[in-house]
Length: 406
Ligand SMILES: Nc1nc2c(c(=O)[nH]1)N[C@H]1C(S)=C(S)[C@@H](COP(=O)(O)O)O[C@H]1N2
Ligand SMILES: [Mo]
Image 1 (cartoon, rainbow, N blue to C red):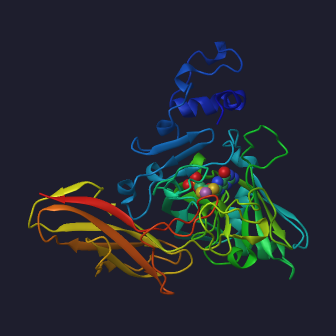
Image 2 (image 1 turned 90 degrees about the horizontal axis):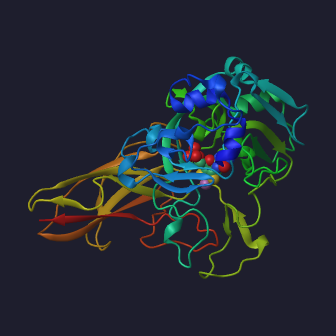
Image 3 (image 1 turned 120 degrees about the vertical axis):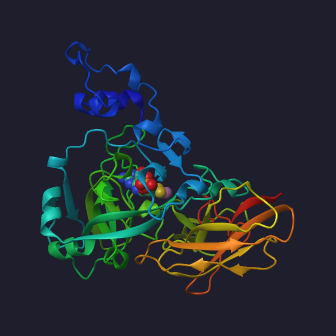
C-alpha cells in the first residue's frame, strides 16, 4: 500500500478506524492530509499482527509467521500470513458491495449484493488450509525470485460463507463450464486501473466441491481487511493464490481461465522434473493444483533445551492438499530411523491435522527433530528440497528443529 495513494482515498472514518480514536479538530485538517501517526504505518498494528511476525515486503505487504507462532489448532488473525500481489483496496462500502457472476459458460450474468448472498443461500463453516504456493521458496538453489518465504506462509482458519456451487446453480451454468476465474477489488501496483494484480481460479470440479466457499467470516468474525474483507473465495488445499480476496466477480469460463498470473511461470511448475536452473518452454509448464503433503513442528520452537533423561513433547500440524495425511513420523538421527507420532483426523476435509509425540534422547548432546508426513496415496515429504522450478514453488521438504540435551 503506497502511503500517498492510500491517503488520497482514505475517508475520515477510515482514518478514525486506523487511529482507534476520533480526530478532534478534523475539520481543520487540510484535504488529503495524512496524520503523522499513520505515516510509515506499522504493519503489526495496521493488520493486527503479532510483533513476532516477519514482514518480507511492504509494497505490496507480505508478512509471514514463524513455525512456533502457528501452534494454535485454528490459526488466529494475528498469526496469519499476508500475501498481496497488488494494493489492498482502501475504500470498501459493504452496503454497496456486489458479486457478479458472468463468463462464457453461464446462461445470463447475475449480480448479487452481499446481503442477498448471505440471506438467499445456506451458510457453511469449514476449517481450511491455505498455503502460498511459494511457501519455502527461500531454500531454493539457484535462488528463485519473489518473496523469500521460509515456513510461515500457511494458515488454517475457520471460514464461514455460502457454497460457490449453490450460487452457480442459482445462476445456471452450461455443460461447457471448464474453469472459474475470480475478479477482485485490489489494484495493480503500477496504478493502471485496467490491469488486475491477480485473477486466478480453479477447474469447475474444484469450484463445485462442498468446501469451496464464498466466505464472509473468518474465525466467526468479519474477515480482516488484509484477508479479503468483505468477501473472499476459499479453495482449501490448493495454492492459496486460488483463494481470491476482496472478490467482486466470478467468471465461469469455457476454457482454462487466462487472467493475470495464470500463465508463464506464475503458479506453474515444469510438468516433468528438470535440472536446477533449466530453461523451460511455456508449453512444458503445468498449473499447480492440489498442494503436496507437508508438516510443521509448532512446539517447541527450534533451539529447545532439555535436561538429560527428560522426554520432549512435540506437536504440530500436517496437511496434504485434497488428500488426508495417514502417517506422521519423526526422526532424531537425521532420517536414519523413524518413529510414529500420534496423528489426529482432520475436523473436516481440507483442514490440517494435528500430531504429537513424546521424544526420548539417548544421551547429552545436539539433536535435530525431523518430521515427515505421508498422504493417503503413500507419498511422503522429501528430506531435501524437492523438484526445482523457476519460481520456487512447492517446497515440502521435512521441517526440522534443533534440540540440545544438557
Ligand atoms: N485479490 C487478491 N486475492 C489474492 C491475492 C491477491 O494479491 N489479491 N493473493 C493470493 C495469494 S498469492 C495468496 S498466497 C493468498 C494469501 O491469503 P492471505 O493473505 O489471506 O493469507 O491470497 C490470494 N488471493
Ligand atoms: Mo501465494
